[in-house]
Length: 296
Image 1 (tube, rainbow, N blue to C red):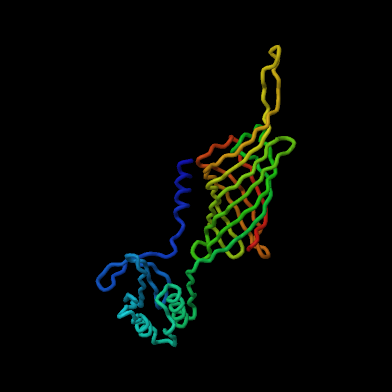
Image 2 (cartoon, rainbow, N blue to C red; image 1 turned 135 degrees about the vertical axis):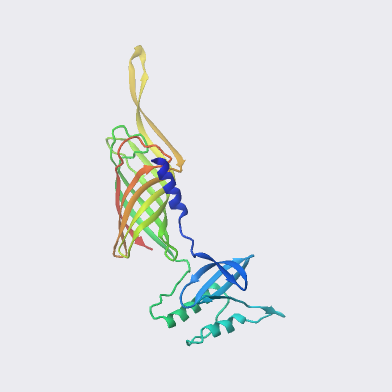
């Protein structure tokens, strides 16, 4: 079972989509591997070839490279003439178009929008969004010693980074989680962790995700009962306080959901359900948190 989960984790982590699909095209008798940046009546293709950015226009089945030849220290801007020729059926100016990806993208989107009123402009720029969340809950800490399976209170902070343009189903979360001792079990822990989330359900009002704890640093303090030999062979029971920190790459899975409310999300998580490279203590995992995330 763990081997299967390990393969699943690896597949999930490496399946983050590449920003643009790549396909093979023949242009002037040569084969090129090109990325699709804008797709519509006019399709923009590009790639870096031999360290140089190259741009191509596809209309129908015909693919043509957009060029800007340098002659006697002056660029000829042949691409503008070709763009004008291919877009003569609408009113659009090529005068300010530069042979760069953002400028060409705007031009292609403008043309496609005029040709098709239902066309949705494709913005490939990186769109980073940040969510800051606070949470609290309970945990029985199954990845450490917990002799009586005691539930302890937890609280913490999430710092979530999302790239909305290309990777909106994926996010990275830097989390601080504090476990507090109680009268039944003198155990406390401060943990910083790096997490990856895949949102297998994503709508405008709620997300459902799998959380993978990739790496963590945990500082633990706890009291343990120790029996030592005393005088006259009488055992003495004493309490010893242990403390220390450790770094781990545990690959632990959990699940959760974010529900849109106001300027943020109510978030519920069932954490640390199963680990791939770390053993639990045999107890059933009870690790639930409830919180709220703000859009920054």
